[in-house]
Amino acid sequence: MIKPGVPAPGFVKRIGSLVDRRRRVDFRALESEQILNRLNDPRMPFGWTVNPYRGCEFGCRYCYARPTHAYLGHADPEDFESRIYVKRTETDRLLARLRKARESGEEIALGAATDPYQPAEGRFAVTRGVLEAMRRVPGLRIGITTKSPAIGRDADLLAEIAASSELMVNFSIASLDAGLLRRIEPRAPRPDLRVAAMARLSAAGVPARLFAMPVLPWLTDREPGLRALFRAARAAGAREAIWNVLFLRGDTRGFFLDFIAREFPRLLARYRDLYAGGSSAEAGYREGVERLAGRIALEEGFPGRGRDERVEAERPARPRQLTLAW
Ligand code: SF4
Image 1 (tube, rainbow, N blue to C red):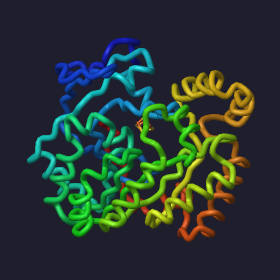
Image 2 (cartoon, rainbow, N blue to C red):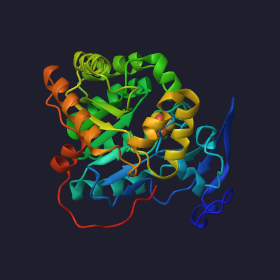
Image 3 (tube, protein in one colour):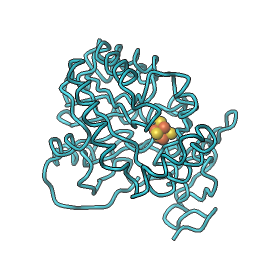
Image 4 (tube, rainbow, N blue to C red):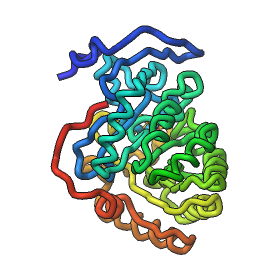
């Protein structure tokens, strides 16, 4: 049970001092026994996670990591964007953990919860430290997910890692409509900059993939917009495309629907109906998006797969182990 405004017991001792303050954002240290965590969720296509930061300045309205800030004592969901926690990397411990991940044969997801190339990375370089350790452990399986062209800083290092490990950089781009995304992902970099970064990494020999996620009902789910996105990503060298319709889990649901009520009030009742059954959109809608995106992906030259198929195909069978920690 989380008390509003009070850090959960497991976090009290981990919260460190203020390490920087910029404009509207405070950065605070967060001690972690392990920066690379084991995951126990057979629905996910990876077995390990690294999230160098908690909180994210990009401030996407649909972000499912936002409610986790309550564990750090933040009652206001907006604090997720302005109270950022910076983890530390102990190289020897990380190297040992990376060897364990290699033994497991399972993928390490860097940035599955928060963006590893958010603005904090320019100041603290925690992600860079993780990549430097990964370079020293060949034979890993790594997936990096970002919305930021700042990943271009590490193009050379990523190319080195790609030469000795299985690496895929997932560019999260829901639409090419910059004006629309400015409202939905207020401080995330423009989509054209993400596409340009994808082209840069691809040219450097780093495999890149389009994450066309989340597909937002009646906002980013029309054929012309999806086609333009898939086409641009393919031209930028993306090898695969994956898509998935918006989930509205837990507290994210209220936060996102409040946003829809303010910004797109004509859609509110339709969203409520579509998500009346729970965190997933109604099955018929999801199947329609699946057919549409699958067709576009194939027509644009991708070996397209939806997220569920990817989980089936990529997750090796393994016993349930620890719960997610980060
Ligand atoms: S970039 Fe990712 S972590 Fe950051 S706010 Fe958006 S969805 Fe959340």
